[in-house]
Image 1 (cartoon, rainbow, N blue to C red):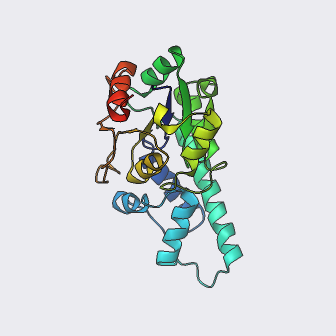
Image 2 (cartoon, rainbow, N blue to C red):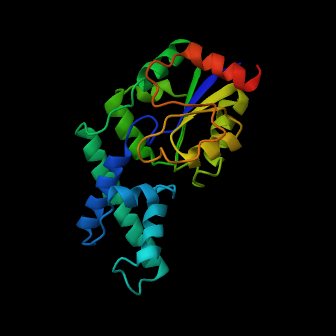
Length: 239
């Protein structure tokens, strides 16, 4: 029986990636780096989960004008860049540059009204989550979600299932009693590895990913109801 819905954040709850890309580029400019991540490059870099990990990967690939830097200095530089990026992203969200994807809020509210469990399982930072959902839902957003697992509590990034396993543990549920919502191949691998039937809503950054193993692949959640989810879940699990 379906008991809970578990949502990824970036790209799933909202189309955030263009704003994240702009925030990264702002941070690079602030630090005097000549790095510019265009859409094609950023699409490639999204294969790396986590903002700090993405910066480290790009630095190792290009050296980026930072020569002879030791490991500790590199970590400090990455941390500074990520702080600048996070601040820029929060400002853009507060300015209304990001909104929830179609059907997301209605589905969350319907699930809450029907007494279903709701959780967030993401590898983004708690600051990013709070900025987005405070603006999109309101200051009461946290009351909707019984569990929130993020980069601060689950440091091993997707496609590793850590964030989903911890979410399930805190919810006291088996994965088979939930549905996960993801937008990427790495997210799907993580949710499936934790035993959750998964609905995929790709965006332009992830539409080329392999979604074999998803319960459903939809353009968005507009028109999707809890009744639909119960039917799909029953077909997928035989429950």
